[in-house]
Image (cartoon, rainbow, N blue to C red; front, top):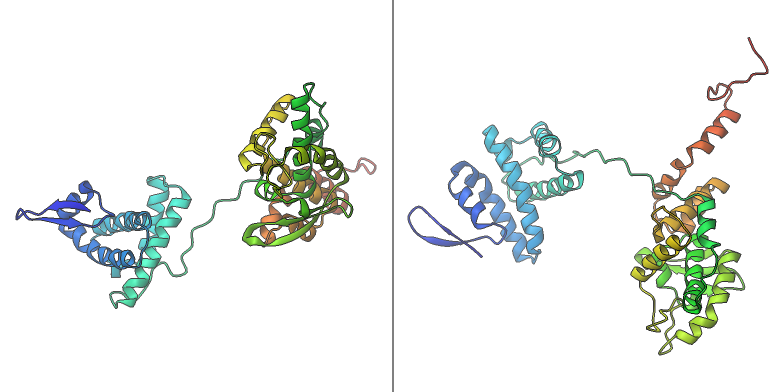
Length: 341
């Protein structure tokens, strides 16, 4: 608890979401103190319901900013409408340079607080109803071209026996990431029983504990077959994991996969930053580029929402332009020189 001293000399305990300095500032500002009184009541209610101190502090920070805005306009909570809310949000974004995600969090706190005010008959309208922030455009994933992946996956086997053994395992991992579009967490979670080398398929447990079957490429299957004898020598305590640490004899960690990919990229002379999820991006982009079957790629990636998969349709713009030039009767990217005017 933070201690605060009133003008009459009495010392009281203040809420845990307040710093001593902030508590003193609020205490000396009667208008702000009046605005924040229902906020404290709401947060006390949430505290009793075992909301985390971190959540309560974040909620208070967002509502305190709106309270400061309302005090400056000489408004109360009930006189804050959509127009006033939009002005405050614009100020947070444009003047205070707050990140969009942070403003989204503040807006969430405001929305929940107004919901409570209405329940308590302290307000009749929630200004956040129907108000939405424009989402920033999702950045396109970086993609490595096929030649770069060939440079990584078909590199010469290392000279030393120790590094050669590790490369057989690493190559199997990287081939599988690219072959089947796995997340690195899905890769390290694979058990021996999840890989069917005869039918060329992999059973993957993804987000939400959902299981999907994905095809296994022949290159990946061959790499796994070459790795398995070493895996069987390294494994300790009958561990069921497919990919094993040589030193520990137990399931490999995601961090280890990340580090091994960087080592392999450096050894292959690749300057581009390589990370496991890049191989998944490449799988998705190259599959879409070759097939155009968005639904099939969605299924293989384990995306619950096709809009997540659609981001890969924006990557290969050069190919899109070629298709447009060939197919559209009024395309202007290329000129037909056979019919000069």
